[in-house]
Amino acid sequence: MMDFFDKLGLHLPIWNAGMGGLIAGPSLAAAVAEAGGLGVLGVGGIPPNLIVTAIENTRLATTHVFGANIILPMSDGADIEACFNARVPVLVLFWGDPQPFVKDAHKRDMFVVSQVGTSDEASTVADAGVDAVILQGVEAGGHVKAVTPLREILRQTVSALGSTPVIAAGGLATGTDIAQTLKDGARAVSLGTRFVASTEAGAFPDYKDRIIKARATDTVLTKLFDVGWSEAPHRVIRTAAIDRWEESGRPQSGQRPGEGERIGTAWLGEESLPLLRYSVMPPLEHFDGDIEALPLYAGKSVEHIYDIEPAARIIDRLMDELKTALTR
Image (tube, rainbow, N blue to C red; front, side):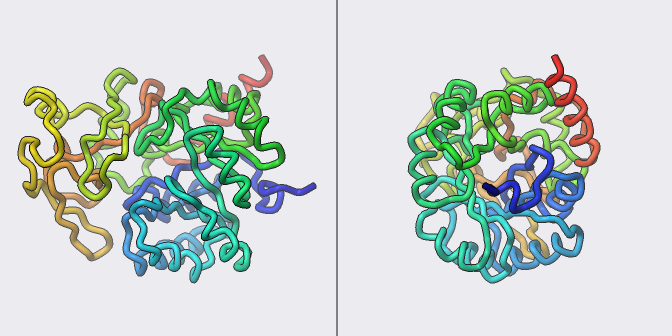
């Protein structure tokens, strides 16, 4: 029986995570797709008109399938409607119930993938009719729904889901990592931090540099950056903002140092976006301000990321490492 991967013609088990604010923009998604993986646009927090433009630009850059990632708690529905109207081939939904969107997506010949943090949640979304599930481990960067290391829940989840494919995410950066997840039953991996440190990623250069200089112990799981999305745990690289908050006694939201201060401006296309201290928005490629005040989302995989390279070169190296690991 043909499954999701067969229908899309996906040959390599590598996806880029849909990092929001178009850090995973058309350049990155198209490069990953052209290299044989699944490129995923990060359209979380993006106005609908820019989502349509991003999808159109990705289509111009690749003939291969690609996806778009929506963060449901930040969605007002207009972003999903933009994806429906543009008929993006794969719709990835995170941090919420995908069921209301599955039927309408399938009517448009779109596939739906749901990212989850537990085996039970994976079973629930599979029962709702999604075509595949991304299972996240607590090692992941960005917003983290998981509370358990990936390897502790991957095999159980694969077994529970049966024919529904599982894509592994969280703390993965090498071909050896990929080999282990495939042995545990995953069909592919979704890599975020590894692809932030790519030449095509739409992240501020100093943010990329911080990733390649960081180690796993430099990452912090916190709820500190909550302006725009409250009470959502996220893993970031330690910055001066975190140090300052801890030194002040870890006060609650609304009582933290510099609350409400404007710390910079980001640009989404020609639209400027003023950013306040403790904003959820990371430093985008076009940013003017203090990156120490913004979340530098990164997973524990920083331990094994040493270079900023083109996405195609990253994938080539990962596949070489994967082949070596599978023959051991």
